[in-house]
Length: 144
Image 1 (cartoon, one colour):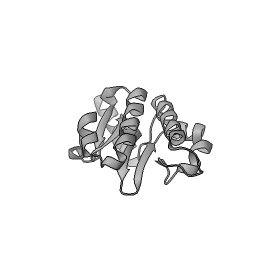
Image 2 (cartoon, one colour):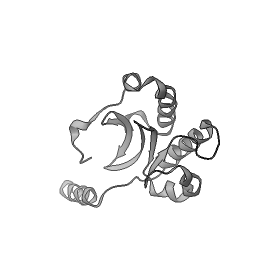
Image 3 (cartoon, rainbow, N blue to C red):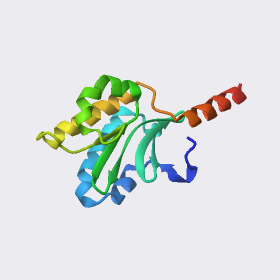
């Protein structure tokens, strides 16, 4: 991870949930459960206060509570290729999934889709910037 290390912290579900506004806490707790079910606990960390999974400098998945709602991150290109059609109506960026109904469906439908994306992402590589990929390759060469 080449992001500022001070922005990362150990993941603690209860401590994280205590920082979430009450109106989003139930959804955040549900998403914590799905993230924990998809990834080993040691893979989950907090980045700028939100749960994420970063493996070998590759961003895989996570979510954040933003001013306009909860956004999940599915950074696995393989998952996006597999689930892109289902996720597309909820995308608010390249890998950002707005966790809110968009077509009259129940919130549970969207949450189930995010849970599936987390599980798929756990099976695949994540995204890495070109600069981070170069740094990772240089580190691997140096390690021999």
